[in-house]
Image (cartoon, rainbow, N blue to C red; front, side, top):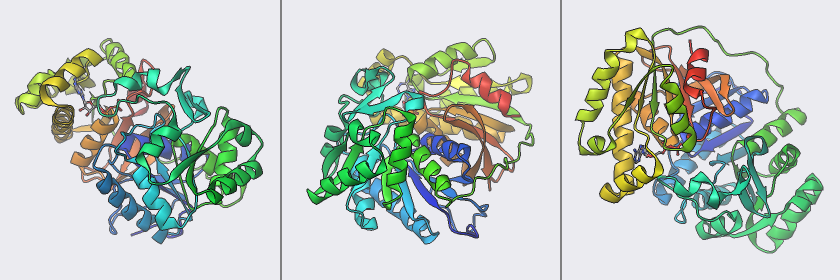
Length: 428
Ligand code: ADP
């Protein structure tokens, strides 16, 4: 079954935690939103919604495959009436020179017939700002931020005009802050000027929350845009302001689901490392041996036995996370992709075993890690509930074979020091 009425906004997210973050933002703006895992099958009963966020796991896969998945998602959304499609990327522009932001943007632009696409990962309220095309993470440029040490896509250039130009076939321009500050008509004029000179995309500066509203308003003149939750917020506000969406204050069910609770951490971000350290005071914590995970399945079995013995007493946390020097050493021994994949699959094995042992409330830290876990659990979609931390909602599973389940999928950098306890307080 598909939604009874047309959706106003279709979003394609390149990872699952990013999709939750966006779905959360849209929900807070009053859009009824469902997050699906992959393109929904026709027999998934979707509630009536304004926006659908299709979660892909395409950030780090081969570019041609990322393009093909995004096109399938776009076709599904256009078929449900979506006039605008947002390609949701990470607010730290996580990608490599081989893609996948540029190739997906190029394909969606070609399919939509748009001449130029607005691009911005800015989200000032979460410390992501773009000035003169340079992305800042808090007070430092992207290439000086912890993202320089990311296990899969280290970011060494903060200038997004340059970064995107290396990935895209089109010329990349800039709509700078001076233009954005002058409002929608000034931005429209700048885009017209750029597209008349053959530019197919423009990175938009945004330093203040109001800049997102300007960008969102102009984005809706077009059929495709690219950015993080910040542009999603701008677009959602523009949809509400223009009367195309009537905000809906009806909260989704918060009926308790019960069952055991567990947390899994595969992110090696500084925020997650700190959150794990804090969790030691609140729950039983097991640190996996990454070398043993790469060696075989025994480490995941050991973790599961450890958890099963403790679940009745309270929540547990199982973490593979290590500090950057240990991550680098493991990658040097086994290769970056092989190490990452082995650990993600071990986390999925553990998650499957935990759910098999009665866990119905599961918190996962790490974007790729969450993707591996949710895929293994074969959960088709989620409704967005209460917000645990900025960008991280409680997710209520839709169509899960185990019945009622609550999940929280956290991008590595997100959440305060007490994130794991904060999540479990809201997941009853
Ligand atoms: P984030 O949201 O912080 O980017 P991800 O889960 O997306 O987190 O990415 C973290 C990657 O690092 C995953 O591929 C994960 O399997 C891998 N990983 C986890 N623990 C380790 C470790 N100890 N050493 C090396 N890689 C690791």
